[in-house]
Image (cartoon, rainbow, N blue to C red; front, side):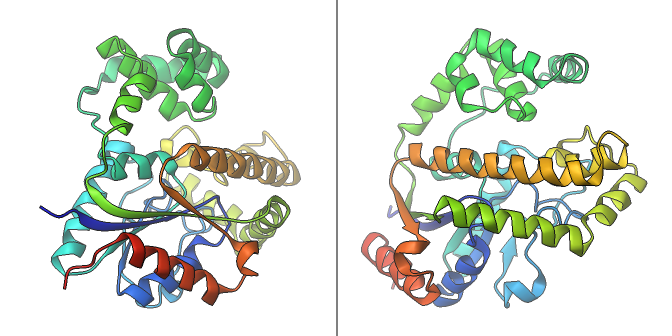
Length: 317
């Protein structure tokens, strides 16, 4: 049976994935699946830089505004929802384009990584969440380092959700999740794919990040987080761990001034972009699309994407 086609367009935050993905989807008649761990939530538009209806230009999008902020979203749920969306797209005779910056989600989908050994252990998870609250994320990260140093190196201490998942996996299986994922990654992808990483020179990217955050504040990020707080959502929730939400929660809770919150948000977003690039550099079979090499010309970038897709993907007649 021939492999089904799949296109991935990723890259660091604020690099310009949204615009490039719309250009590509329109050229191919494709539909877009979001691989963003924040845009999946309703009521969280400004801080997640969620694509607007106008920006979509009629291109159908999946996995945007599908969960309430108090619902859990993790890699297994992403796989399930993304695969269902892909089947819907294939049934129309169209091609799915996965767009977003959550590299781990993309990897899990592309190589169909199996997480079934990791059944939920709610009691242990609650225990770890309590440790994170009382002793801090660094303490929890040290716990992971003690049992799986490789995972601790690749998972940032602030990514409490993934630290907990790795500890939970080790407790249940006695196996390091880094070793499990390595074996899974050696599998061949079940798709005919093109995996594009859109990138920019660091100075430009950091400037775009700063401008985007300034714009978010102007657009009403503080009011958006205030509204979430009034609805009963708290800083501890998984959805509120995203950049832009926990920082503004700290301001609203009197932990920082607004100026400090914005400074922290800009700094941490720059660090996050750097980690994203490091992640994509470790991935195999990626095609780097450095915007400066195309003189920032959208048409040249699109022509390059289409050329590579033609080389690597056989479309059904």
